[in-house]
Image (cartoon, rainbow, N blue to C red; front, side, top):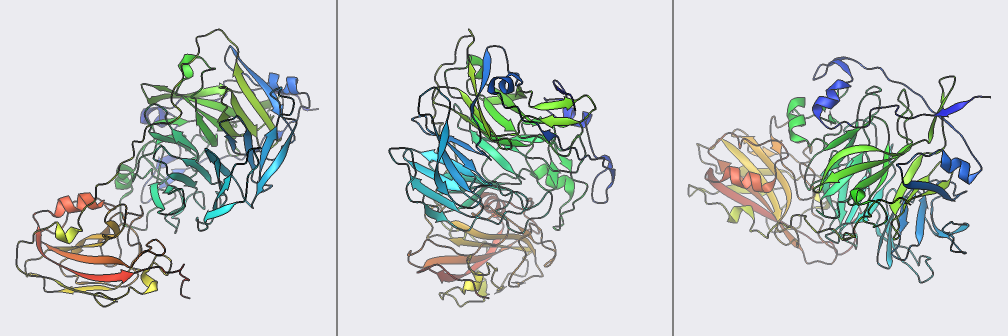
Length: 605
């Protein structure tokens, strides 16, 4: 019989800076455009261990003094994400089963004897509760359902049906932000690649009706756990690092997620390290990509696999825990020794994270022969109205509760409604009405549609989403470059909605072909840069006005400049482009197309 012992203090848990990351740096060698590196990886899959006695099982989990752990439910099969209603009703999603269950505590002893299936759809994973409404997300779809008086869910209504396909990371999660918007995490389709769909490896934001969806932040490989710090309202998330960079890379990332920012995947990982296996198709140096991406605020042991996350807003833990975040770490399969299989805590001071440390451990067991087993793989995590912490084991089907029974001073109540700190752009005129050309010349602009006519569906978001052919004449002889801006002033927010930014277009170029790539730097026409549109992606994104809106007007504007370059990074935002071209516009012109959506489009073959 194999004999096991609980592992403790197996691995480094706190990696706070680039200096710390260099101490465990992998890969070894030269990383860059032409890498010459050595990567040593492992496959080590601990075996599941089952203990049938609840007290014995709970006794293996070690928590700080004053805390206690108990098993509160078993036989849940595959409990993944946890959502707790204001009245204390606990819901759990089960991805492999494809349903949502309500846990039942008939005798009120704090343990759940059985459960009731309240919803079912293939791949159901994330869940959020907003008053008497539940929001549920599967791979491609988002649903709403009314919460009935008995805690069951009413009929599901699908409000989104076109989230990106999954690939490697199918675990969508969802939450309602302080701004009243839906936030949906969409992982990458792969370990490391250039995902063709810009909505992969992102946090998306949409209205509660599923409309007005945009990319909030990108470069996030697989951020399952995220939430808003209750005192500051700032959004944070725990992201899964890239596999096969070695046992000591990539660190798991705790990111301060801000609107419009890029967090590096797939080219840059943790503290500005360049991925030796990938080079961008766009002509951007890896060093520049690292400078354009945002580093994590804290790092953690590689391959620990962060899952659901919750900020502590209760009053049942010591005061030092108030406003901290807890993260379930499901555990590694490709690290020696294994990492994760634990609950971690991100400690905040003055509203900022300062340490990522182990909180509950003991689920990982080391055998006397050097092998490993596990008692559970934490996945879901939530705080109850009473201030206890629940976490689920999605492999052995167990639910645990962590509570505090010590004598320390307890936390004061803090708001469970964080402040809204998201930026709200002020309405603006379109670009051509904001600039004053220095000459009387006017550009004549033509497109693959006539001025004032309907834009073909091939150029619409729900069609081919291909940029139209654009040509211009009449530029002054001393024009040194051009800028293209396509904007919709009829959009409600932002106003105008930016559909396309292209800049540093050489003076010899007076035409852009149909269907340009969406890379931030184009190969052809050479060295043309593209900015970030209001969808949150680079390059062109086509019209998609709300159904039944009157036709929106799309202004394709061209500006001739007296400078050869705006001096901006690829992916620049509208405000930066407008500021850079100020005082440099020689001439401008536009062509205007119309587009409306009386019914959902069907893409042309």
